[in-house]
Length: 236
Ligand code: SF4
Image (cartoon, rainbow, N blue to C red; front, side, top):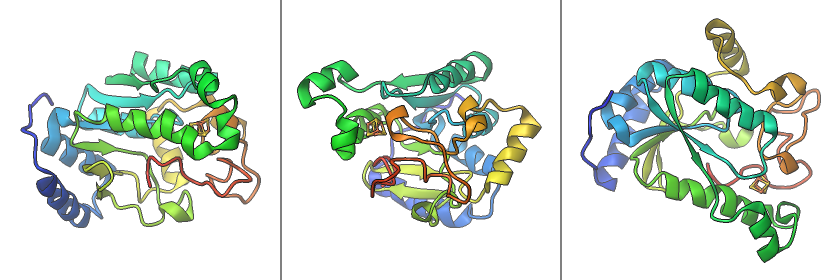
């Protein structure tokens, strides 16, 4: 899809989001993404943490060549960067890598080393929230891989909602999926996944803030383990 869409006002986008959230609640992930492609054209992108490429794969079916935005915080596991490179090489998507204004070394020089241990909210703001805010400026809508079953904080995720913080439409096409649905899609379509998923990790973020999950823990229990923090601020 290469149609150029006129920018809409925030009020128009909010109305669109709220109506679509109601109308598409029971639609399939592919139908939701086809709606986003029709409605927003090139002003729509997918964000991916490169935990797996399920939403990027679905989106490439709805909109070949779709922009897939990846935040390279400078703290990723090598396996995550490798997954990003493989997605770029084999899928019909346009991978866009966003980076923070400062390298890790520059941040260490200004704030001291291991800011993630002392003030993870600030570290996430500098390395995730701010770069994404800047990177999404050219889009009206963005898609995420959020799922309701991942954690209590995500249980109410709408399939299409209004991102008031960024004034954009937020599309979560697999919000209603379970882990079994994800596994079935990966198996059916041979979708790329991060090798760490085979090594005890269930949710993959930056290396210093991610550990393997234990039996019975929810998928995101390995993120900022031992801290009250559960989200990086991208989805708050
Ligand atoms: Fe920093 Fe950890 Fe947030 Fe990554 S997840 S940006 S290392 S605090």
